[in-house]
Length: 61
Image (tube, rainbow, N blue to C red; front, side):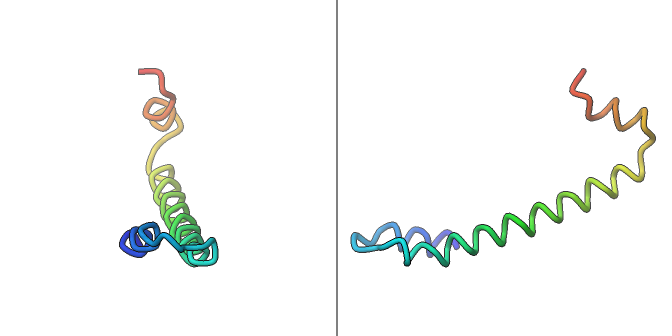
């Protein structure tokens, strides 16, 4: 996707229509990565006690 974006940006005559498929790919990738992150978070949460979870993620270190 990066090379496609670079090629499209380099074209002086590129239009919004040229970028739309790239925007759609980026949105799809974002959704997939968000889902993976949430699954891993859920898995980690299941492995920790409430006290451990708060100790690690409270931001009070």
